[in-house]
Length: 444
Image (cartoon, rainbow, N blue to C red; front, side, top):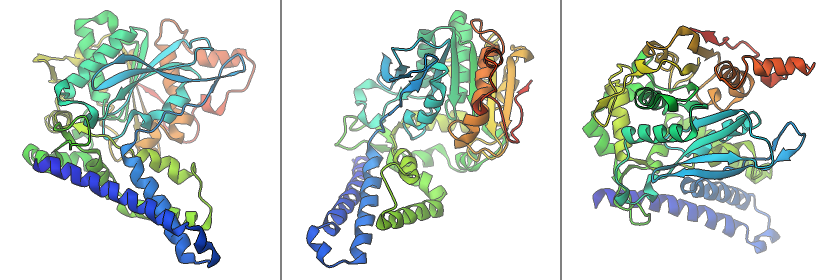
């Protein structure tokens, strides 16, 4: 009961702050006060508006809100999100535009389960939709999953990916972002041994901790500074009575959010102070830069305790993927068995979460894969977020990933995108070629 009480206490604090914000906004906006203008009331209303929005977003899953996409027919096509496979802990989601012809590239985006919803990759999805038929792993909030559904650890996560890849078939191109990179690699190796004909065509690993020891960061240092017992005592609680997952052991989203914010406390404090000032001056709006970022950043989800603890113990402490000793259901998954799937790694030179060296380590584990099917890219000046959703992704990395897909797909002639542009006698678009001082994609 102690941990259930602490979970409910956090929710009570959040709910109280949301109520205080809404109350302050309503009180300061009372029409009678307009007879006697008072700057203090304007600031009170501004604080209330920002506080209410901030604390209400913490327990709401953001909408995908995918805009219509342009197609070769010159029309914009409406996109709908459809569940293709439904599981207790996550779904396989398909972004469908029924009125357009299906693109030749079929992409599976593997979203991280690291505190935020899959909607964190919304801008990544939008950038790929014009050129690809996009699927994504849509993980569920553990607080909403009844205890009767059982456990969910990194082995279960891996087997979910195996099921999703098997369902989509061998023409699929997998792009794993951040946390799931090592497990996507393990899932591919699992298929290579158990069901080779179901392996994807290509695997792109973006900013993932394949070998956390290759380049230490605050994340890896923290993992080594605490014991598993300390970690369980500090981070794990039981879901309170409010949700369907009552009694399930989780790493709560609100606790994760507190950790995220504490890492850059001064930056976040200034961001919210500036936003309150903008609201008071009438310069803010629903979809300004601050709200667009924090509506997503503050929306957090609980992770199952066994998934969080097994990730820390087996990926960051024991380095099972880096040592090629990862097991699923008691059987070792040999990454060296991957012999046909082309693999590309992407890193950012300023990534402080998965530093350069951690992800590219995957290529050394692929002892059975010819060098012609390996590639790596280091994006100069890019941080963690930028390599999959920022300007670096849009301008440099995305075009390189699409070219990599084309060069290793049977249905697409090598250099398809480049030849198509040349045949059209049109200058290449800025988004179709790398620019700036980013490092070129390097074959291994």
